[in-house]
Amino acid sequence: MTHTCPQCDKEHEELPAMTFLTPASYYWLSEEEKQTIATITQETCIIRNEDQTDYFIRAVMPMHLTDACHSFNYGVWVSLSEKSFNDYQTRNFDAEPEDIIYFGWLCNIPSEYEDTESIGTNVVVSNNKHRPIVYPHKEQMHLPLVRDVYEGITLAEAKSRVPVSTK
Image (cartoon, rainbow, N blue to C red; front, side, top):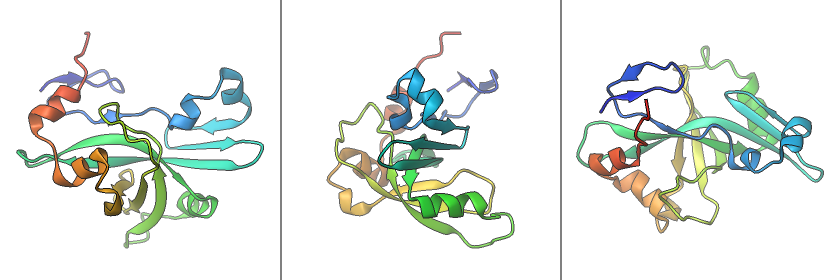
């Protein structure tokens, strides 16, 4: 499957990751709120509400493909506690060989799912310079999204989720 990458504007052969550019909480802010209470980069987001501050990082949630040797990836945002977020920001992952695992909440739900309850996750950060990997908690296998992450979808289903390029 050939697709044009919106980041580099080049054609690629592999299945693209379906990415969310912001956490849902940021998306729903007014333009004024985005300017006054939020700080966002390509990798992190902080929203300072009157009663609490929310911390987010970008991550990858792989979905198992039942009939292929690779996975279908969603680029998602997860919320972390202030302590975990600060730890994530200050660690030198190049120098630390072990994986670090944080608890987080999934902040984006792909449109193919109608999951309405919060999905707890383990956010695994490795020293391989890639984005953290998100694993939803298996206790929530009753949710179709969580079930599909672990039990998988077909390659045809994954391809059907990729928007057709208009170029």
